[in-house]
Image 1 (cartoon, rainbow, N blue to C red):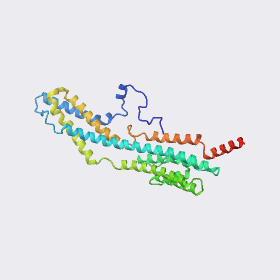
Image 2: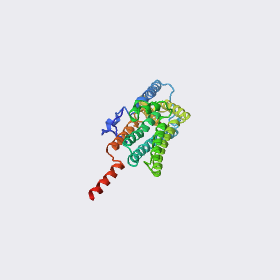
Image 3: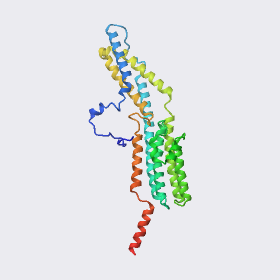
Image 4: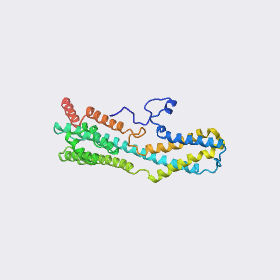
Length: 318
């Protein structure tokens, strides 16, 4: 399910410059190749008509769609999409940071008055990862699946499958656990308040992701931009055929590749929570949290350990 990709934004491995250029998986070429080819062939057709003296030329300065206007629209479109992408990454970074702090506070602060308390703490800490995974599935429009089954008791998993918003229900379980531990005297009011604030941050971050997902770029803007791009690329051969002659098709293809590529990049990253190669690596982010929690459970001591160590040290001193 998970891969070993790094989530620090760098290339996954060192590649030569030419190798990066030829990388097709993360490129938008497969998505725009048909449009680029069509515009290129249309440019070739116009060059043939011009060769046979058909009146197909337009003055170079009489651009139907001014290049400056189109450029500004593309810049705005791309910047808006990247802002959504970066905001999504910041929100998931907030989830990661909060889960780490939350798990550390649970592991260290919650007293273990009974032998079974350790197991319950481990279950709750794994629920923090389950919250992130459930959030990922929710943002991708997926229902609860076996990816979550190993992070909670079977009866909880079955209950979660019936919920309309699984992450919120997991947050409820965590808050219920904290309240119960407070009533048992395992945490004090200040610790309870601090942990509830961390839980609130997790829910707020997920709500922010939902805001990105449920507020797409206005359809009218996307339609109008695509119409202008098509008009620009199809009118371009008439303006440059006198200068480029039989090279018109290639030039039009290259220009079409540029403008269609920029628009496609914006389209791909405006929803950063999906499965596109350039979307956020949510599987890897969740896997990182899972490893952090499991390491903490395995290696980090509890308060009880330090108390026992201190008592033994004093007895040894006397």
